[in-house]
Length: 107
Length: 119
Image (cartoon, rainbow over all chains, first blue to last red; front, side, top):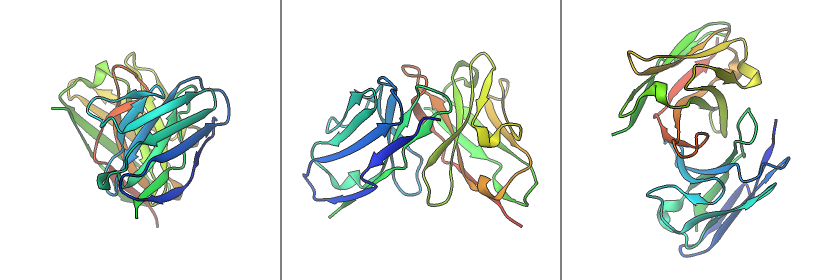
């Protein structure tokens, strides 16, 4: 199975800060990567697909980049409603696998 | 409006069985990749199974031979039959639709149903 490793596991940042989360795959997955946001008690929400494509209706402060084994998820200006856990997910090879999650808290 | 509503979770003893249902509206189950994803309490997301449009399916190794994904087109419903349940199957189970633009991106999810395996 392809292992997905996210860094950091958690972070605390202030409103307006730039937040960067990384996701590393255990093997080359091209751009076959998605990003999700999950708030407590809720189902995940798709934010980014194909590593860099913004899902319809998702604010433009969210972005993704990368290919191969190294990927980045960025919130350009952190808002209070962005407090959540973020997951990357690879779809190069079944079984699909997720990163362990990054919890983003507001200072 | 797209909606997915899971049901069928509950408390079951180890070795027992449950069948989860996911009733969908706003789209046709048989025209989409449909998945089950689970989340153990306080843990991350784990993909469980997919049912392809053509009817084939795939499972993560830990549930192979114990879980079966299926659908009823007449009821527009997805199922997950879970047999020989173990304690480590305890989780919230979500059904999720594959996005039409990127089939392995899950653009719509249910609210989840909790399965607890315990004696």
